[in-house]
Length: 239
Ligand SMILES: NC(=O)c1ccc[n+]([C@@H]2O[C@H](COP(=O)([O-])OP(=O)(O)OC[C@H]3O[C@@H](n4cnc5c(N)ncnc54)[C@H](OP(=O)(O)O)[C@@H]3O)[C@@H](O)[C@H]2O)c1
Image (cartoon, rainbow, N blue to C red; front, side):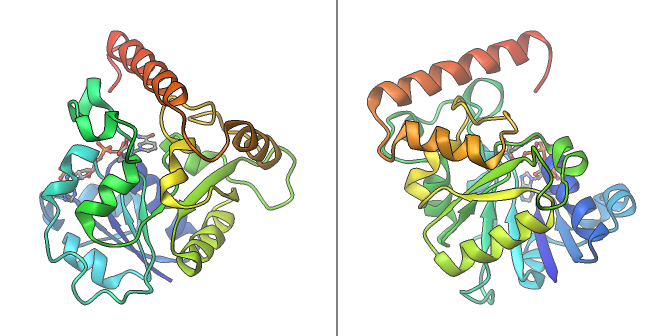
């Protein structure tokens, strides 16, 4: 399969390494142009291209850039991309360390990926946002292995979600359907599954406990949890 990846940082490179090792052709892009991606291409085996080329080559497309940069993506990014090509979003909102405060994400009306979807004008599938990039490379295991990490997959386009869930499985993780994009708050920063590498039964149990409608108390709790994490990261010089 051809996979287009827009964003060649931690997540983009981790996915590229794994996908190439599985025999897929990966087309990877950043903001500065393919000539700046020689090292990434060499390390991952992906082909360095522009963002538009990555999108046009992809049978699946991954957008994995900082949330604050989403509005900078080219407006014609998905022109000529067939409507049945799934587009994955890995975004997380880091207001303190990276993105600055976005009031529309703090009211609780929109999930982070719904905000991205509004900007991109394409139905999105959210996945790979709650696992460390390095674990994508090191922690995938065969289906049926005890303790296999499960990844939540959210989105409103059922056929696209099925294709993405199959890819998650191929990469060595159990895909768990997390409902539509409006429900993807359950996998956002500050929630119990964020960075927790849970197996499928625990993830499903957690989602059952969380319910489907985000309450104001849940929203406030997860924002506060994430602010603590961001402040800890800032103190340790991580960002
Ligand atoms: N790091 C993790 O472990 C992790 C885990 C899960 C989810 N996430 C989330 O996934 C997203 C990406 O994270 P990351 O850690 O991979 O980011 P990163 O390491 O900072 O890399 C960001 C990449 O995005 C590219 N980029 C920025 N603006 C762009 C634009 N307008 N057009 C094309 N490419 C652009 C950058 O290219 P240039 O350098 O050329 O600007 C860079 O290659 C974030 O929302 C993050 O919160 C990260």
